[in-house]
Image 1 (cartoon, one colour):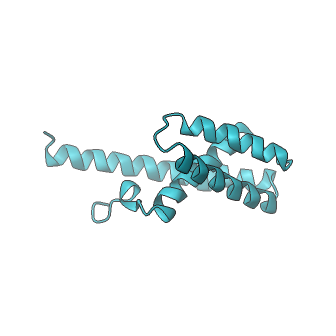
Image 2 (cartoon, rainbow, N blue to C red):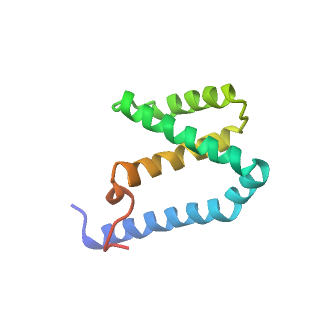
Length: 118
């Protein structure tokens, strides 16, 4: 079994990685993405990403390829409405939509945010 020090270390490392990714996104990626894509287009793309992610979760709940399916569906949907984004932007929108779906829609905050352990 794990002792308390190993568990605490693992939790601290996970928090550091999450905060690092969050800060990286907030400081470098989000401002560049907002400059490259008009806000109204980005808002539409976010909405489509969340719709696609929820659709995939409902339709393929046990699939191991959900991200690949979501990427393909979102790319096709965005192409239909003439929104053109990079692969990185599409991946970023999908990951953000998955996080939002899990924490806000499905109420799985405990999966991502450990209350009392931070």
